[in-house]
Amino acid sequence: MAKTGIEILTELVEQVRLLNKRIDLLDQNVKTLMNKTREQKPAETKIDPKPQIQAIDPPPPKQGKMTILTEKPRSGVMTSGRLVVKFGDKQTPIADASIKIFNDKDVLVRETKTNRGGIWMCLLPAGKYVAEITGKFRGKDLITQNKNFTIPDDGRKEFEVI
Image (cartoon, rainbow, N blue to C red):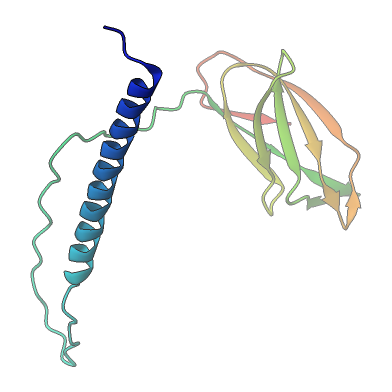
């Protein structure tokens, strides 16, 4: 025997009413748990004017699943360069200049800045690169410079861009 539309609608209304009761019950349980948590505030501790040394045991290890994050070992060559302005035989380092390193496919692989001594550093694998150098000197923008360099694959750990 097929149900009429009104019978189906009546059943749906009853199911919604039961769901609302369950939601209300869950809401009450959450409120009860929150109130119990608030009631369990730690007692205020008084500060002893004479400090005493006490041995404190480390907390027990946490139970459950634990993920240990480890940093991947970095490989490559520590690459560095120095950015200076020459006035006769005097050199003045350029601090806070931006260095963008692009690979041979014109993809940006690293970004760094120069320190107070005008030195920049980054870790790069062997290959061909272009360093795009921008910055300011005495408040004036420097002309953007590109420096091509190749890090050889000969096992070295350091490489200086001159």
